[in-house]
Every structure is written in C-alpha cells, then in structure tokens.
Amino acid sequence: MKHLFTKTLVSGLLLFTANTAYCNENLYLSGNFGFSAPEDSTTVTFGNNADIVKYDVGVALGMAIGYKLDENFRVEGEIAYQHNDLDTINSNAVSGDVQSVAFLANGYFDFKNNSPFTPYIGAGIGIAGVFISNINNNTFTDDAAAFAYHVGTGVDYKLNNKFTVGLKYRFFGTSDPQFYYGDIEYQSHNVYAGISYSF
Image 1 (spheres, one colour):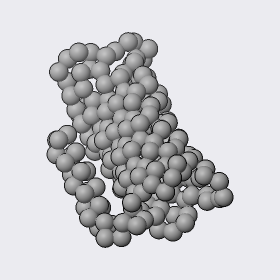
Image 2 (spheres, rainbow, N blue to C red; image 1 turned 135 degrees about the vertical axis):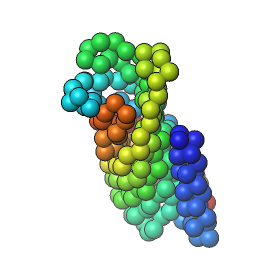
Image 3 (cartoon, rainbow, N blue to C red; image 1 turned 180 degrees about the vertical axis):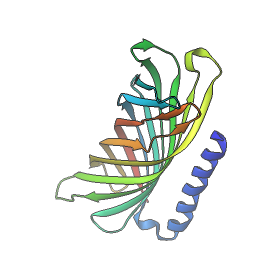
Image 4 (cartoon, rainbow, N blue to C red; image 1 turned 30 degrees about the horizontal axis):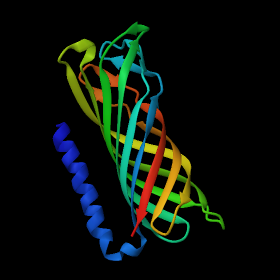
C-alpha cells in the first residue's frame, strides 16, 4: 500500500506540473529540509486503553511546485515526508518508527516590501499516509490514510531573479490515523530551510 500511495502522490504532482507549465513565467520549484518534533500523542486501543507515546526529533523533507497568482498570493502542490523514531510508551522505552508521506495543496500570502526579505504566512490541506514499523524490533507494520493539514509562517530572501532561500515554521497534523490496534494522534512542529527556483 505504501508504494501505491506514493505513486498516487507523485502522479498528482506531475498532473499539477502539466496544468501549470504553459504559464511558466510565474512557476517555481522548491525543496525544503529540516526537522520534525512531534507532540506527545495519545493512542486509544480497541479496549479503550489510553497510552501516551513520545517520539524523538526526526527529519522532515518537502518538494513543491508553485505558481504565483499575483504579487502577494501563490499556490503550491507539495509532497512532504517526515520520519521519527519512537521514544517511550507510558514512560517505557520502545523501539520503532513512524513515517508519513503527504500530498498537500497549499496557499501563501507574501508580505512584499522594498527589501530582499519577504515574510509570509501559509496553510494547506491534503491527504497523508502514516506508517508504523519495527515496533520493539519485531516485524509488525501498519499503515493508514488520514486527512492532513498545516499552518505556518516563514521568511524568504531573494538571491537573484532565479533563486530564493528561506526559513519556515510549520505546524503539521492529521486526523487520527486508524490502525489495526486503534487510533493515534499525529501532530508535529517542523522547521525547514529551503531553496526555490523561479522559471
């Protein structure tokens, strides 16, 4: 299912590219690399037992194709990935990891000014595949699809007419993924450094 889900997301991003390529004077590509710090989450099993799950800080990546609607507004199609190791469940040390792959439709408002710095705010919605694996070094794996969303802010610095670099913060979350043994909360605080290329 994981490979099928990823192929679906890539197909969606390629479709977005095809639909916007004809007006590429406002088109841009961006890549982001940073870290993900998930909030402690509560899992609810079928027996209505609540467990507190803590995670290690992990990696967060993103690739997007965007289009500038005007001086202030722009939209994006993005594929976002993050990976975190499990730390503890109910204060007991555990091993294992949680990963997500999300396809997001984003909107941003840029606060244009006379400097090369451009602050902005943004938000997005989409769908995410959430995957858990290697729990306590056994072969148990599971995955679930969930509604995904994010809000955030950042600042870009224009190097020249083609390249821009920046830093951004994002609060990312999903509806509770429903796994075989129950539901889990999935939210994180992400910080990225990024670069974009304008056509």
